[in-house]
Amino acid sequence: MLAPFVARGVLAHVVHLPAGDAALAEAWVDLGFGRVHAFAARDLAPLARAAPPDVAVREATREDLAIAERLADEEARFHARAPIWDAYLGDDTAAGTRRELEELIAGPDSAVLLASVDGRDVGMTTVSEPSGGPLFIPDGAIGIGTTAVFDDARGRGVGAALVDRALAWGREHERRHATLHFSTANATSRPFWTGLGFTPVLWHLMRVLDERLPWAHPQD
Ligand SMILES: CC(C)(COP(=O)(O)OP(=O)(O)OC[C@H]1O[C@@H](n2cnc3c(N)ncnc32)[C@H](O)[C@@H]1OP(=O)(O)O)[C@@H](O)C(=O)NCCC(=O)NCCS
Image 1 (cartoon, rainbow, N blue to C red):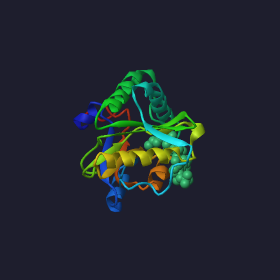
Image 2 (image 1 turned 180 degrees about the vertical axis):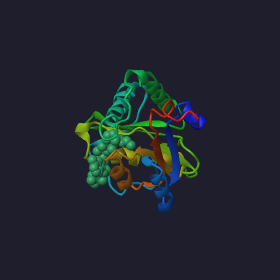
Image 3 (image 1 turned 90 degrees about the vertical axis):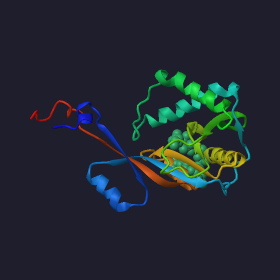
Image 4 (image 1 turned 120 degrees about the vertical axis):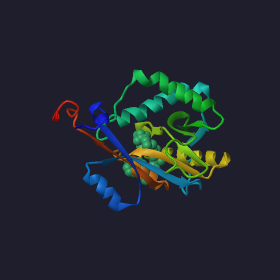
């Protein structure tokens, strides 16, 4: 007898697991679950490293929407590649992404931050109210969202300069913490965020059941 939700085709099962309990994590791994997302947090102290002198970070305005959309698309395309393999929906999500960026730019408690090198816009991050369960969101937190630097500008401090400005934005808005999440399969994310002082506090574990299950099971 299948559980009704499995019979209806609910095959992707997700667990929110606080970090730091190895025995509990092992029990979920034994049940076939694996990590897919890390939720991380830190205080808002400025980064120890200074931004390179040719990198400038500013708050985007409506006039910057086109470049913000291109950088959001850069992040989505990166996540569509091995070994992350997120679905890329391109044109189907473009209008939603544009609306979201417009709202972040216009909202009093959010911002889109753009980084330029010698006047060319090459990177973006966003700050807003944090999303996620109270298990991992500390009091007075900002949420750092879509973050990307164009391929040819990576590895020279642009991402770190964006995060430093996001932390300053949080201090200016009288917050105390910053939170974010990243795909554990994203090999650049973990060293980037942990190198900038973020500590994983919660994992999303997932198990995807055999897609034949709704019809391939004993009938009695
Ligand atoms: C993640 C990303 C935004 C980092 O931007 P960046 O400008 O290249 O980062 P920085 O040059 O400021 O690097 C800061 C630190 O992060 C770490 N880091 C950055 N890229 C790394 C990589 N590929 N491998 C290992 N560590 C890395 C290093 O510790 C680095 O410090 P260092 O310069 O002293 O070595 C950029 O690689 C990117 O756009 N990736 C594709 C999209 C993406 O994964 N976005 C994040 C989604 S959560």
